[in-house]
Amino acid sequence: MVIKGGFVLTKKQLQMGATIITTEDLREFKMELLDDIKLLLKNQSGQQSKKWLKSFEVRELLGISPGTLQNLRINGTLPYTKMGGVLYYDYQEIMKILEGNKIHNKF
Image 1 (cartoon, rainbow, N blue to C red):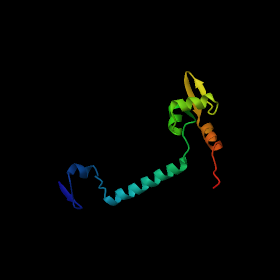
Image 2 (cartoon, rainbow, N blue to C red):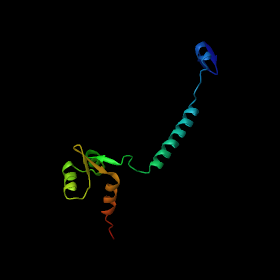
Image 3 (cartoon, rainbow, N blue to C red):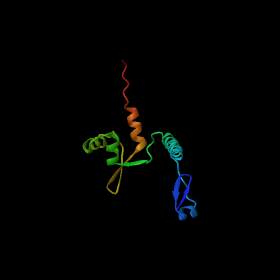
Image 4 (cartoon, helix red, strand yellow):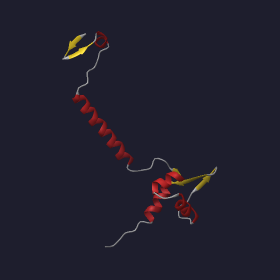
């Protein structure tokens, strides 16, 4: 064992070129990581990554029950596509419907 810079290292660690990480290194890494995450979130800007959503995803997105989703389909409020017994909804269409039904109170 060898003492180097106040740290005890084995000969194997010295031969492998051991790297010592300081708390300052960790802080710097944390800040870089946070900046990268913020940039990713900013670039995504709330857009859904999928074009087509399944029923359970639409129910989660809108916070509605299966019965309410069925009513929206039946009365033609929410367009859908059916393939192989699976219902798909266009994310952009859902957003258009939400925007189109926005209520502006004039208080």
